Image (spheres, each protein chain N blue to C red):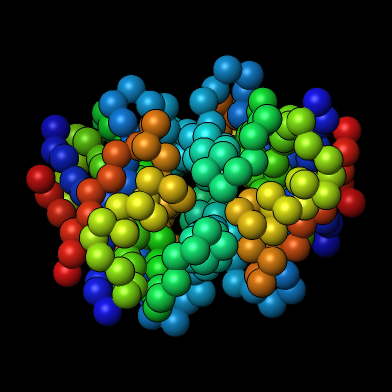
Length: 75
Length: 75
Length: 75
Length: 75
C-alpha cells in the first residue's frame, strides 16, 4: 500500500471559474487586494499501485493534461 | 417556506474546465462524437425568503455574475 | 447530433459538502432561514449518441450511481 | 503583496462525494486497489493581506470550518 499526494493546478493562461467566483465572493464581503486566486485540487490517495500507475490515473481521469498540470508526491 | 431550483451556467465564451475534464475522461473510455459538454450547477434551495432575496444570494455567492448566468424557478 | 440536459443530484441521506459550504457562506453574510441547500450538477451535452449511450456515460463517469441520481432530458 | 498556499481537506469522517465519484470512475476503467481517495482544494492566493486576514477568508468563505480543515503556508 502506498500513499500519494497529488496537486492539480491549471496551466498558465487557463481560466479558473471557481477561483473567480471565490474572489468575487470575498470582494462582496469586503476583502480587497486579491491579485490572484486559483483553486486547484489536493488529492490524497492510498492505493496498491506504483507512481507510474498513479500518473496514468491522473492522465486518464484525475486531471486533464490539456489544461492542467499535476505534481505527485509519494508520502 | 419556499422552494427554488436554480440553474447556473457559464456565459457564452467562458471556458469550462470541469466540462473539458469530463469530456477528456469520456473520450479516454471510448465515447466519441461529443461536440459540447458543459457542467453547470443545479441548486435546490428551501428557504424562508422571497425570489428577490434568492436573486441576491445568487449575485453575492451562489454564482458569479461576471462569468455565469443563472435562472431561478420557484417550485 | 442530439442535445441532452442531465440533472445530477445526491441520493436522499448523502452528505453534500459543497452545499454545506455555500450555506455556511450565505449565513456568514447574513442570509438566515435556509432549511435545505443542495448543489447538484446541470450538464448540457451535445453528442452524436442515443439516450441509452448517454445513460452509459452517466453510469461510468458523469455521475456515481452509488450516491447520486440523475435525470436525462432530450432537447 | 504576499503569496499563500492553502490546503483544504475534509475532517475525519466527513463523506467526500467527489472523491467517491473519482474512485468509481477509476474502478470503471480498471484501476483496483484504491483504499482512500479524497479530493480537497489546493488554493494559490496572492493578496495584500496578513496570514490572520487569510485565515478569516478561509473561515468565512474558502472553507467550511464545520466540516473542513485547512492549512495555510506563506510562500
